[in-house]
Length: 273
Image (cartoon, rainbow, N blue to C red):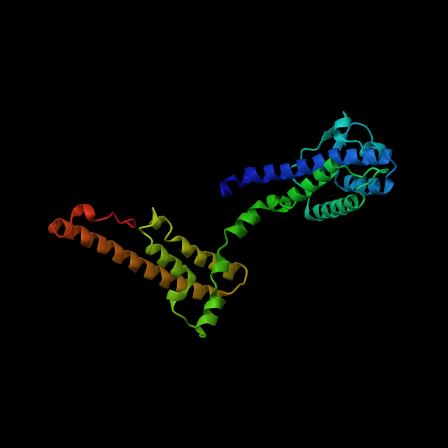
């Protein structure tokens, strides 16, 4: 995904911008015009604030108060701006807050036998769908930071937990999480198709924890502790792999020397080789 970021980030930003403008310019503009025609000035002014802050278009002529509330489909001289940046956090928070107020007000004033609801069910559904979609806009526009936080395994180091469990500063490497995960993978060769491709993955916890200790905590002492613990875990892992490989070839040699006792076809392939 990191190789695709130069293409994904602008595409996602354009999607967020276009979806927001589609609602702000088109749907909200139609709502404002309908409300003004029916004399619902309070709701119309509330929705007009959304367009005043978020509408983004280019018009060949000057925009007056009436032109701003017209929907995009009704303005032949208007062209939606094609931007590679979606709404920022302050604007998005403002739009979501106003839409929340509008939806609550529309829910309270559903209309009755002699009065019509301020917003139709379709109009409320349009705003509700945008509210649901806009929850992920900030994450979509901050895709590199999102991927970095999702792939950061430093929180799995869990040093405080092990210190609390052992009640001492120094504790055996066999109880830390990376080694326990590696040990578990070493014992699942019969259930995992290719465990050797996964057995070193838990060691990335040490990589992320070391990076976090240097770049965020600025703690060289913690970095040295993580480095020493990672070296110990790697030594234990390599020695366990060596024993498994040696045991496999010892059994394979025995099957060739004593085929009656150990038939060659019963020697299973070692997934760690």
